[in-house]
Image 1 (cartoon, helix red, strand yellow):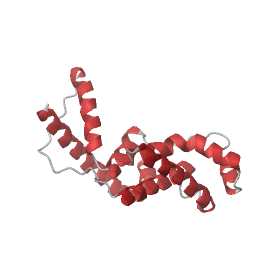
Image 2: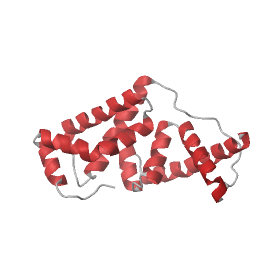
Image 3: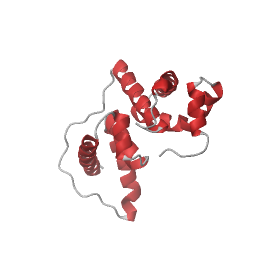
Image 4: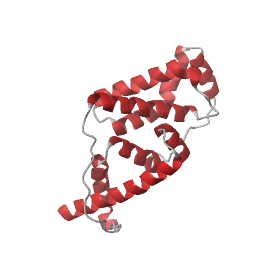
Length: 183
């Protein structure tokens, strides 16, 4: 969630005036958020760093089109980061990480003794997902971004986001259960 700390409006106005100080402030305030989105999609550190830089350059060039009545600055920047990441993945034409359908899901064991193992399995399962799938799950469940903002970032509508989340939760359960059988 975007923090409503003082100076945000001044920073945005500074960006519109092409103030170097405002550029630095924007990167300081939102660098970790942008890096998080990019890092979920692009695993190579050099490519991710390039996409983060491209995100800020694109945002600074397009600041005149930023409309706070449509999205918060953070959400608008997240959408640019998402688009730059997708563009980077398309250019590299890497495998998407899609996996074949696995066996039917079993209930996950949530006892304390198995919690650490389940967390490790979840991390493994997330790595098997396509970058877009991993990003969606992370934005919603780990970064706690509201569905409306995630929909804006990913350029989808809320029902599509909800449907994908449902399918992804089932997919993760299948992957985790298949991994448990293998261990």
